[in-house]
View 1: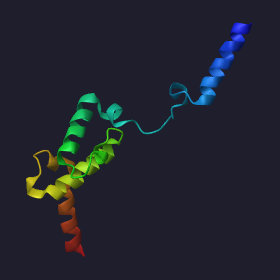
View 2 (view 1 turned 135 degrees about the vertical axis):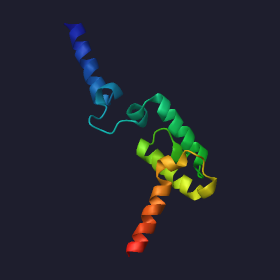
View 3 (view 1 turned 60 degrees about the vertical axis):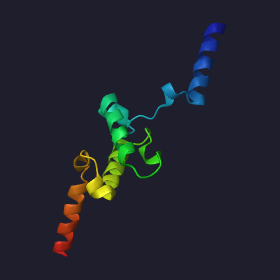
View 4 (view 1 turned 90 degrees about the horizontal axis):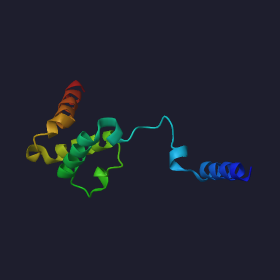
Length: 106
């Protein structure tokens, strides 16, 4: 019986202390790595770091895929004609066209 009691106390301590394996939030957003896979995740980080004009913070691996893509799009737009060939895939040119259409309509 003492072993069983220690086991129950040990498990209770893990749960109460917030063991990451037992207390991970459910239904939260997937990490970018889990969302798109390791290879594409690494490529996304490399592209972000290649174009970002700020420190490494906007391209932190803990950011969501959406945040990384948004940083790439913003940075590509700022680079203009000097932007690398992958930039059109992030919508920088599309956003400029949408802005021009909005101005024409107004």
